[in-house]
Length: 477
Picture (tube, helix red, strand yellow):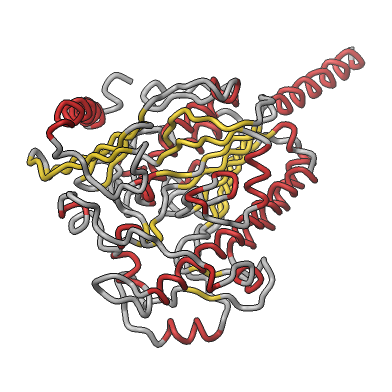
């Protein structure tokens, strides 16, 4: 009898281990403020040094038409983690808390945890480190956006005037230090150690790694700054307000306030001069290359631990970024630079290694990850799974996307970008750009008589989306 019991227990243990091994892991890489500047995107002919993200793109599906649903950090992250679109009253600024705006939501870390996964958060995932924190099995203290290492930078900050959120910071630093003194380097090493642990215990994981780079301030080791010739840095060639565009697109939506209010040496109004602009763009590029190197280390750590063959890697950014276009810096807009993002999914469940032109939004990631892991998603979520595209990149699951920021709401497809501005029920203006002929959005054609029917068609689309997102997503759940 004892022998039979021992055999039964052994079979039960093996069966349990098999169950664990069959769960598909997720490596969820979040990047702050990254527009699709990588070489694999060939974005506006910028020459970037991003070999590791380029390699990841070659090993999976790169989404060429991926967009944020709102170009501000807190709201965007709340949206992706809950699978709910932003609206005028929900998920609408940097201070957004998912647990406050959508307390009935089942966030990604919760649904994976409830399905037997270890849920790990290192770095910046939610904007607020305590947002839905009870659903992480392990997390660190979150982002450190001004993690200065140069004593001169620290001295400048400590003696600076007070900005919007405390002492103003220098905009760049590049001391001669190793890769792991900054927080992005530290969380990379922490994740690699965690991979080793998972390779030993066999537990399934949803690991979220949130890189702050290339968010301001642009801080990175000197070797990444030295990768770029300062004198060869190209400046934006369209620092002007788009022709015919309403002033609200410039005045009410954007004054580069994040940069002007929190960083040293930035004028409060007007265009930045060429020297300052070149410093910022150089710093941004160097910060992107530093973050790229950390991603290379991270993925190598996953491979060295023997976990790559059972792990889907999803790389995404919370929104895009302006580098002087229309006189803007940072994000906070519905213009293309603020809303287009990189999105790469590399999954061993699919052999496809190609680009996709299907339009997609960050809200689509939630159902995609659930399907990859064999988890039934909540019925309230508002995105579409991207797995058909992973199977065949020629599949088109959407022809247009919807995004917003403050008073502005936009619908974008391969032909046009259309934005309307509202304050409550009050119409404040609109814009239409021909994306086949004017991708930089330099000329608003919404007031041309010949475009009246076109404008009306997009107006109807926006009205339908506005009505939809203003409904309670949980009313029929």
